Length: 144
Image (cartoon, rainbow, N blue to C red):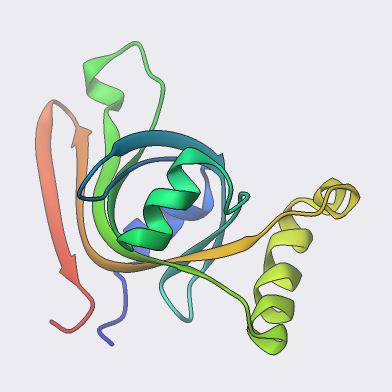
């Protein structure tokens, strides 16, 4: 796996809501979730029930796309990522436990409600930032 550029890592770490869309043969849906970031594996960890509309679709087709963006008022502060990922519901106890440790470190109160644990294994990212009104784009793919 190609390491994520540090400015992309910092952007992901400094935010907390992921917007994503899932599609199957018969349905499609968008959703928003809190996430925790695992830099070592280049993945987002989310908690959401398999029974949700987006959960059902991701079980049917685990290819998703999404965004993380700042909510800004000034064009000069624009920054965000667009990504494609593979969504996996973590069923194996060791994988669930590892992912939950990362998630609970960021969101301790999440322990109060049981949920299914998912990883969004990032496959490609386009990061856009606007500093001094000059757009800068960085492309990253997991395998180069």
